[in-house]
Length: 241
Image (tube, rainbow, N blue to C red):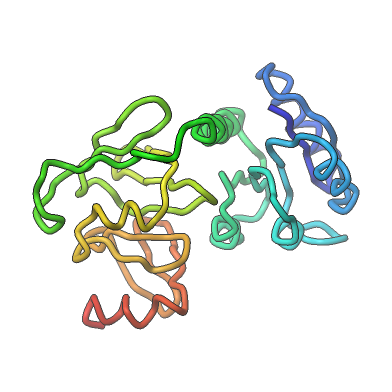
């Protein structure tokens, strides 16, 4: 796995570089304190993963990642937690808050490996019908993830997050996510429409887990999920708000 590190703090680069070397299978092909200096290597070399800080003097990490065409997988690394929603709206694999513990780094890399493994799979037959029941009555679905079909109880799905060509299914009470090579349309066709609502181009939520609804956000546990303008009217109408 080839990676680059972008951070205006050399010490932060040193920490991430050390973590990569410790794992052994990640090759750091460049590190940069100015994001603009990284453009050439991204275009010319095979870069699988970008570690990117957010608050930098030349250009913010959010702006830099947004401007990339055919961007690799990326993880935001920052000292500020308030950018998390914006980071995930850009389909970040993970959002690591400094100082970054090694176990959180490992967890983020595990997600990257899962996504890279999914890239190698054929696109077809990712979701299997649950048990022949109608969408309103079904209790579970089978979702293809990596090299197996995983059974997921619908009542355990808190929300689903879009990541480029993949979906990340968040499961309640286990801090567990399931990654699948799938489109929202394919998955929504298998889910009960009265229970799962599209609220944003990158998010579907299970209405049973909604704690509060704000003007532009939904709160599930401590996660704030944005409500997209194009989905707002339908979402509020479905909930009778």
